[in-house]
Length: 286
Image 1: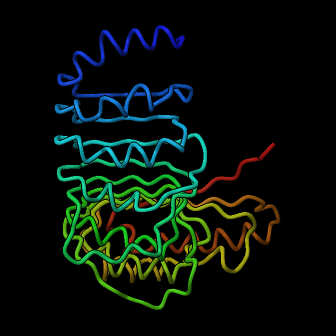
Image 2: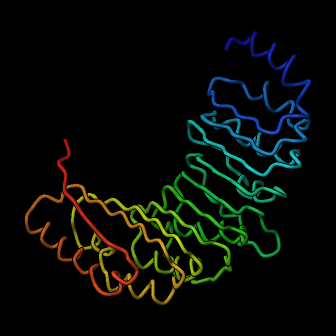
Image 3: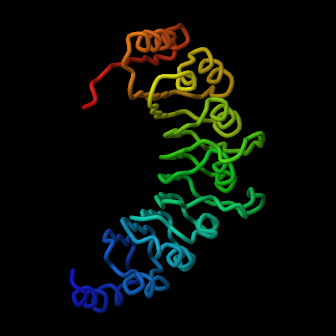
C-alpha cells in the first residue's frame, strides 16, 4: 500500500470509526505505526483484540506505553521482526492492563529486568500467556508471580539459568493446568524445581527438547524412574504427557543401543496404567 493510500484509508475509514473497532491487526513491517496506530489509540474504546505481527521493535515501547488507554483490551499479540534495544518495564506495563486475558509475545532480547521484583500486591488478569522469545528458567518465576490466574502457559525458548538457582520459592498457580515448554540446555534438576514449585495442578504437559550428540547430560530426561517419581509426587492431576526428545548425531550402534535401553524403561506398569506409550525412530539428515 502506498503512503497516499494509507493516509486516505486512515483519514476516511479508520479515524472516523475508531470508536467502533473491536479488533485491530497489523502485519506489515513497513507501516509507520506512529502515523497509523499511535494517534488513534485513545479513541479505540471498544478494542478488545490487538494483533501486531512483524513490526519494528522500535515501536514496541511506545505502543506498550499507550496500552493503558484501551479500556477493554483482553487479547494482545506482539511479534517483532528484530531485536529490541530498550525494554524497560515492558512486562510490568503489560501485567498492569486491567482485563487482559490472552497475551502472546515474541520480542527478541526482551529480558525480565533485574529491577522487576516478585509480585506481592499487584497482579495480572492474564489467563493464557505465550512467550516465544528466549527466557531463562530463573527469570520465569518472577514473571509467574504476576499471573496467579494463569491457566495456560507456553514458553518457546526456555534456557538454562543465568545465575545459579538455589531458591525454592513457591507461588500459588492454582489454575495452571496446561503447559507447553521447549527446553534448551535446561538440566533436569532445574526442571524439577520448576515443577515442584509451580506446576502441581497441571493436567496437560508438552515438552520438546533437542540435543546435538548423545552424552551423559543429554540423557537426564530419559530417566524413566525419575520421571515416575516426579509425576507421582508433584503432578498428580497429569492426564496428557507429550514428551518429544530428539538427538542430532545419534549415529553409532553403541549410542543407539544405549538410547533404546533407556527408552524401554518407559514401558513399565506405571506408564501402561496411565496409557502413555513411547515410540522412537531414526531418520537420515541430509
